[in-house]
Length: 282
Ligand code: AHM
Ligand code: MG
Image (tube, rainbow, N blue to C red):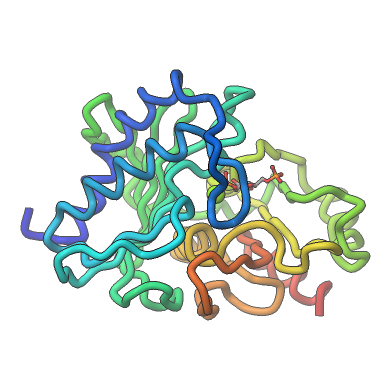
C-alpha cells in the first residue's frame, strides 16, 4: 500500500474483527491495573497486544502508545506515531453494551499536541461493526465485515444541524455547580442518551446531533478521560465533522499533554452547545 496513513487505518480495520471475536472469552479482570490506576480486563490487554504487534510491523509506524501501557514502544524509525485506546468503554463488556477501538495517527513523537494529528478515528462494536475516520478535512464511515473489509456508509459525515441528544459522565453530586446549572438548561432542550462508552455516546452525537461530555469533577478536576488517547482523536473527528471540542476553555486540539496519560475534561458536539458550555464554566 503506497499511502502509509491508509496502511495504518487498514491495520486497525483488519485487527478489529479479531478483537471483537476475542471479547467473549475475555470478560474477566486481570490482576494488573493500567497506568491510570483502572482495572484491566483480559480483553483490554488482548486488544492492546494485537494492535501493538500489527501496527509496529508497518514501516511507517515509528512508535505505538496506548492507554494500557506505561511507556511508548518504539518501532523502526517510521514517521508516524499511533496512540490507541484499544477498548474504549471496556467496562461495558460485563453488561454487554457498546465499546470499541479509538486511534490517533500523529506526525510527531508522543506525547504531541492535537495539531500533530494527521488522521484519527474509531471502530465501534455495536450490533454492526462500523469504522469512522477523520482525515484530510473529511469524515467517512464504513461498515466492517469479518475480514475488516470496508463498505462505505457515508463519504462526508457531518453533524446534523438540529441537535437532539446529550450525555454527560461522572456522578451528579461530583459535578461543579456551574456545570450542573449548564446541564439543567441542556436537559430542557435535548434528550438523554448515555451508554458509558465515549465512542458509542459520541457516535450518537455524530448521528443525531447534540453534545457529549465528561466534565472535571469536584474530587477530580481533570475528569476521567485522557487527552492523548481519547481527547485528541475524538475532538479531531467531531471538529472535522463540523462540530466543536473543548476542555472547558478551548479546543482540545490546542491542548498539549505533558505526559502520555494526562487527563482532561472533555466536551464535543454541536458548536452552539460547546460555546454555551465554555461560557457557563468561565
Ligand atoms: P476506558 O477507556 O477505560 O473504557 O474508560 C473510558 C470510559 C469512556 O468510554 C466513558 O465515557 C467513561 O469511561 C465512562 O466512565 P464511568 O464508567 O466512570 O461513567
Ligand atoms: Mg477510553
